[in-house]
Image 1 (spheres, one colour):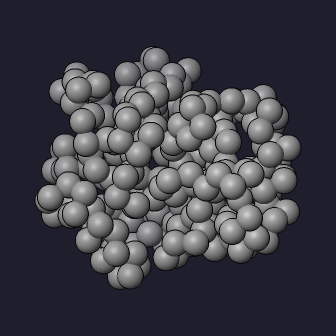
Image 2 (cartoon, rainbow, N blue to C red):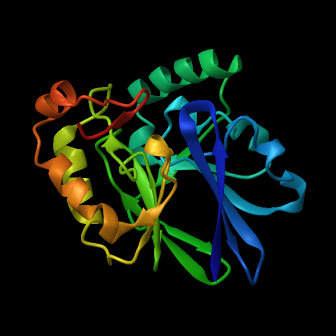
Length: 228
């Protein structure tokens, strides 16, 4: 059985995760915050890898804590020269340090396991070219593709409303009882069953990108589009 430990940090309303296999004790750390050490003792964890759902700097600020200790993984499409330069530059501004090396090796269906339990990599581009979600029965870590009260922004470099719409259409086909664990607590929501948020997601992907951006009365501060 995999357990989800959610770590909430006020900065960026970021939600990070530790996914732990109850039997083996192995775990993945997802999108670690800069103050990860304040939430967990790294030395006590059997960390197989750090996984970045994408490499926007708010999701990589804690990577340096794991550099040289465990693999730091992201999707291959996050590894383009443009994406690396843009996000490394922003990360340096946020953290005042050069970001550690990321292994851009994840692809759709990459074989990730904790103990004997597979964790499926879903490539869900749109918010960024290499955005991913992680899925195993009953749970979806959705990164910045979907939130409980919004979807990832697409009006930033590398964003595509056409792609995020296709990604969301794919996600809403998952079982309705799937628990969604988003990358941010925008709107003060930390998780929900997929069935609960599907109507909102359908509403938002029906809107053309420009109309959604400019007509929304409540565009959340960082990388999220929220409904009017």
